[in-house]
Amino acid sequence: MIHIATVHHGSSSWVQVQREYLDRNMTQPFRLWMSLEGVPERFHHHADEVVPSIGKHAGKLNHLATVIGDVAAPDDVLIFLDGDAFPIVDPMPVVEKALADTPLVAVRRDENVGDPHPHPCFCATTVGFWRSLPGDWSNGAPWKNAVGDQISDTGGNLRWLLEHRGHEWTPILRTNAVDLHPLWFAVYGDVVYHHGAAFRRMVSRFDWADLGLRKDQRGRGIRRLRGEIRLRRREGSSWKLARGVEEQIRSDPLFYRRFVDPPGG
Image (cartoon, rainbow, N blue to C red):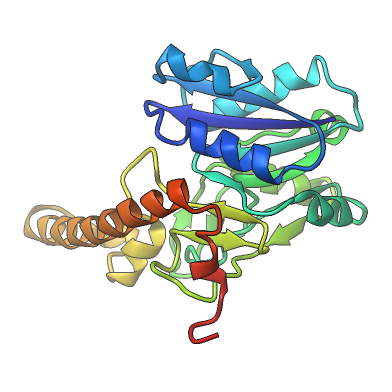
């Protein structure tokens, strides 16, 4: 059995979309476990199981994994999926090939100023491995990114646990041939789409770095105000693109071709 854990927060916009793409592309039986804080109850039927939870994203993912682990077999596949992510083809051939070599496979967002950690927009392992590690999506263990900032993010502790307990993992990398934005609207491994920032501000570490706004240079007063104005302009441009892509996602199951087909191909 495949168990899919996903978190939606404060918005119902992606609940039905995600379920439809899973039903369309998953060829093996699966159960969809959802955390739906702030999502109206009329959308809950899209989940096979609704797991009540509050708090931060990492804590919700950890709780979903614990609840699943209490009823699943050790060799069942456990997939973590962001609320604005879904498979565009059957992901299981890629997952099964990777899990034959390493105990965990996940998106790695090199394009986000060199993020080195497993990202929860798509991550697969087995229930038994997650419990034995034990898996943890919390922030915590930091790294220094490509522009020299010391940071952590959801999955920081998972990266540390894997490294310090001697486990390799298989990264799935961005395979876009066309980029509307260097981070958002991503296709990974030609199997999964991640919209990006559907439940928060559409501003990323990439945007900070691309605008020359280092974390230790944000400052106060005029310098901070100017930086925020530039970020808001970038964010507005990203949201405008996002609305158009969202419309296509809902109307055309092959929307992703615009991102994976080479220009002029």
